[in-house]
Length: 190
Image (cartoon, rainbow, N blue to C red; front, side, top):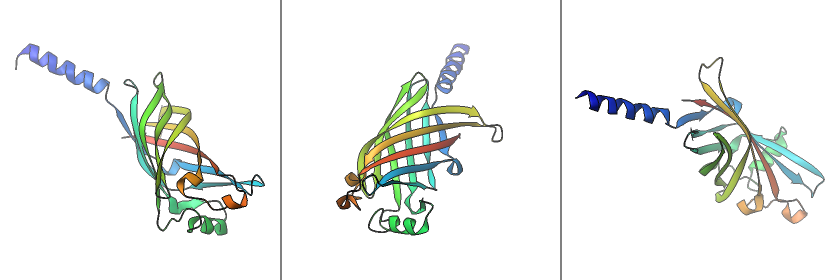
């Protein structure tokens, strides 16, 4: 190998590593997708969350690209009320026996500078896949003092019509179909 070839090889390797995408694993102990849904046409608001989430986030902030692949264990649905949890998990609503997972897969990520601000993707809920855009309200990365690795956190939100996903319980009684989704997520650089 001649000196000129060595220099080109080193420069190419340096350029590739400087602009490589970073992969982050979802931290299940700091990630909780939650939601708000109407009860009785505005009488009150039900709030629930899922307590088990896994997945991968890939970000290339220099190239302004990335991807999300998230899986939510629907059987971990929790309203903080056991009777309500059991009802929501049955065939009337989420039918977690037949549809035990909710997934979100990105198509693209929108950046403002090197900060992601929105994710365009598809959510599969109750066996139905529909487009869903997540708005990233907050995003921050730090060198985690205990893990000694970069950790990124975000707060994302979206709204969707649950009837579009085949969850029609209560709609005939005047329940409103709009669901507000809020996701707090932390992910550890791999």
